[in-house]
Length: 235
Image (cartoon, rainbow, N blue to C red; front, side, top):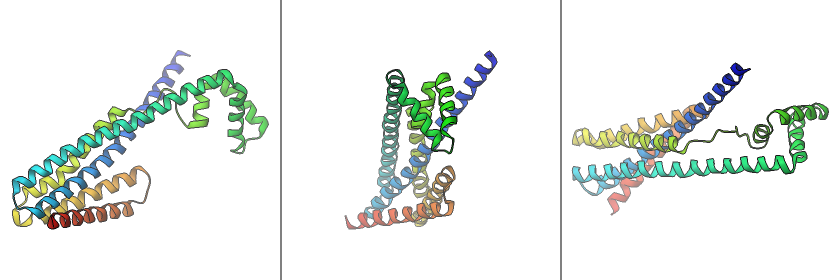
């Protein structure tokens, strides 16, 4: 019996860890894409207005740091709100099981009836589940939440921070390290490669259309460059 309990706890921890990793990867991909686009936008808008390499570098670096911190704080606030909401739901269900158990039982019955189970069988399933793990059952049936598993805002924040900074380094490094006559071409090339990679990762994570996601990201990246370059030329 003790072995089974330990195995269940281990399985639950592994499941939680996987969810946290997926959440961190999601934040990382989004942060990287934002880092790439905001930095390349600033680089081209400043480069269009001045040829001073140091001014361009400082503007890009400042934007990279600002973007990374902004993305991290945004992810922390967003995931914290989601985690808090999940905790509130847990307490609400805990109270409902005490004050309105019949309604909760009916909810579980209907859940399985809607999935093709006969009413008689659904009642038996509800009886067994609510007798063994009532709170876990209600959270799973009504909210698809696993008891004790809350998304970690810190993992999302750190992933977003580092990925946004890493993403922004691509166009910044390409512009600074390339020969002057090839700076813009190198920066555009680095941006295209970087946003195509984030498109590939995001589509792969969500089982989406990889080619479409990559093409969409490349188009957005090129449009971002053109808009910011135009703004720099105007002002």
